[in-house]
Length: 494
Image (cartoon, rainbow, N blue to C red):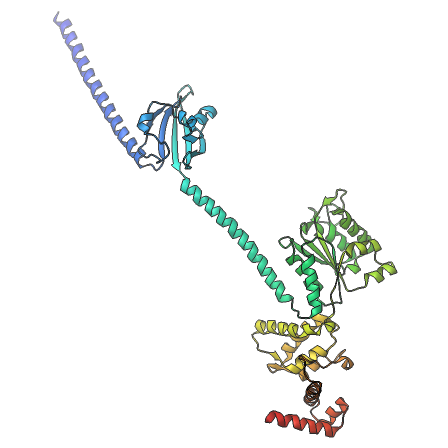
């Protein structure tokens, strides 16, 4: 009997102990949950984003302390237990993140726009239960109105910067071109007026002029002044490339076209210049079989690479140049008549330097200035040196003038480069019968005669040193030279 009572007491004691331990476990679990909840609230309060938790129906369960102002337009406390998707239907904002998560059953990121014009970046994360059913949706939202505005402003600034960069590059190229376009003669003024007039058109241009007159510079001017200025400008000298290579350079080729060809093929000049201008110098040197292919390009605006049968459409303006008489070549049968007429749409004749003596002086000073800057020198041309340069026939035109000025700078011992020094470099091919005295302003005829006479006597004395040799060169008596020279010297001393 006592034994059974003791057993009952033991069981009761064990039950009490188990109940006490269970109570302690529950209290510990509650305390842990409280601490966890405290930590969670602390984390939520420190997060920059607004956090919402909604159920699978879209009903708001809880939210963080961080609330985006002017977004909800209502107190969130009033929305607890209510479906927040209804706010979209009322026009508060769009679209609904909850609805998108429910439809796609995956994480969704959207930019919401409110009726007040604010932009909100919202990210919805789905939470699934053990049966892979949607149970909760956690929505993190951030106001990006200011960020979006700054981004748009930055994009506008970038676009403007890119535009200004292109314009600056264009101005730089124009400035570089203007440094090459040195002229003051009416003939070159007429040429440049024509260049500016045709630059906005895509017509084929044929530049004709002697070697060294500046045909390439004129072609560059057409490019820079025209609507193709931002597009490529390529140049190819038809006389400088071997005939067997010229075709592949112009038209390109596909891989495996011929032995030694690049395995990847090659784009020709026509395709590379697409949208821009291709300058073909010395067009008169182009072989007849290539003239046929060039004619097709001009007529059809398409090219067929070597080894291919597929034409490629192109948009290229052709500027051709020659120092030959193409009409004469047509008569001789070395240049196709139909190609000549295709090229000769806008003919521009560039006059030789001897026909525009007004350009000699500014060109000479321009070349001299560039060399002075390059070599840190201070050379200058005396008036009699300029006069001698203007009297020279310049068979090599502007290119010859540039070479002569460089030769003068390299060879000069004194900063002042005079006529006597210049004459040493113009001896070959220098035709005295073509020398013409230059008068820079209108004056009485007698004054002009005396001025020219004085210049000739001084020039002759500087060159020949003695009155006898000077008189022989001038074709007058020695006594006349002696008398006149003494008068000139005495007047300068006074």
